Image (cartoon, rainbow, N blue to C red; front, top):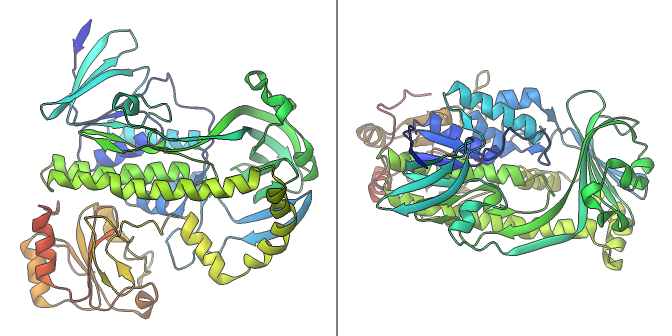
Length: 522
C-alpha cells in the first residue's frame, strides 16, 4: 500500500551516521528542510571511529558545536610507540598545531557518543531521525526525486524531494541503485575492537601503538578514569570462528607486554577493513557521502572526519541552489573536490596500514628494527611535527583544482582553507565571521573605497583586519582580497584586491550572498 507523504522536504538524507547527521544539521542551519531516515531501530552503541580532527572542529565551530565536542571528549595529548614490548618513542602533541588552528589538537570522542550529540542538536532544530524507515526505491525525473520509504509498520510512503543524499554506509543502497562502481578490496586480517575498563602504567591518558612480530595494538584513552578503546588483530586460528569470538579469544601477547590489566570488557566486536572509493560521488540529483563513497583503513583517524568534510562541502552548495543564491552548476563541483581527496587518502592510509600489519619479512624488518631507530628522533624535529599536524588534522585539504578556485595572493591559493590568525582581543580571530555560513571577503591591511563600495553594492560582507606580522607568517598578503566560501575555503585569492575580479566571479557563478547588509569593520 502506498501512502502519500505528509512531509515537505527539500533534501532526503538516507542514513543517520555522523555524515548524514552533520549534513542534516548544516542544511537545517542554512534554512533547508530535510528528512533523515535510517533503517536501524536506534543509534549505534558501539563504534570504531574515535578521532575528531582540528579541521572538523573548525567546521563545527561555525555552527556552535565545537565547544561541546571538546568538553565531552578527551584531548589527544601524547603518543607512545612500543616495539616488542619496549617503549621506543614518545611524542607530545601539545605544541604541534600552535598557530595553525584554534584547535591545535585532536579530540578522542567515540562515534556513538558523537552521534548522540548530533541528534540532540538536530532535535533542538526541530528535526527527528526517522528510525526503522528504509529506502526501497527512488526515481530521479522531472526535476525531482521520488523515493519510496518502508515505514516501521510495513507501509510504503512516497516522498518527494529536490535531492537525495546517500549516507547509508559501505553497503549503500543509494550507490547500488545508481549503479556506481565501488572498486577496491579488503585487508587480509580480521580486526577486533574492545571498549574496556583497565589499569596499568599505559592507562595514562595517552595514545599507545604497539608493534610486534605478528600483532599490533592501538590503545586509545577515553574520557573517564581507566577507560580505553583497544584495536588489534585477531590471530589466524581464531579468524575462522570470528562470528562467535569474544575478547577471551584474541591474543593477549601485546596487551600483556604493555602491562594493560583489563578489568572489564564493556563491549567487543570484530570487523574487516576495506579500501574502496566509488567511481562517482554524484549522479543527477543523488549524491554519495561518507562510507557510501569511500572506505579505508583507520590509520590517522581520517574516516569519519572525511565523511563530515563531504557533508559540509555539499550542504552549503545544496542550500545555495535551493534558495536561489547560486547557479545549479555549482553542485558539479562536489564530486571533483571530494573524490580527489578520497583517492589520495585511501592510497596513503593503505600504504601505512600495510606496513603496520603485513607479515612479510621486509615489513617485519621495518616495523621491528628500523622504526624504533628512525621514528623517535624524527618526531623531535619541529618541521616534521608541524607537517604531521597539517596532514592528520586535514587543514591541508584543498580544492586548488576546482572550477570554483581562482588566483593566488601570498602563499594562499584559491581552493586553500583560509589560514587562521589570532586577532588582538579575547577569543578573537579571523574565523569568527565564518559563523555566518555565508560568502564574505577578507582583507588583511587596508581596502580601497572603491572596493568597499563594490562589496556594498552586492551585499557582500567585507571584513577588514589591521595588518600584523603573524598574517604574513601564515601566508596571507597585505592588502590582498580573499573571497571566502561558506565552508571557510578561499574561492579567489586576489593580490590586487580588484572589485572587477570579485564581481565577475559572482556573476559567473550567479552567486548572491545570503547577508542583507555589509558587516561593520572589525
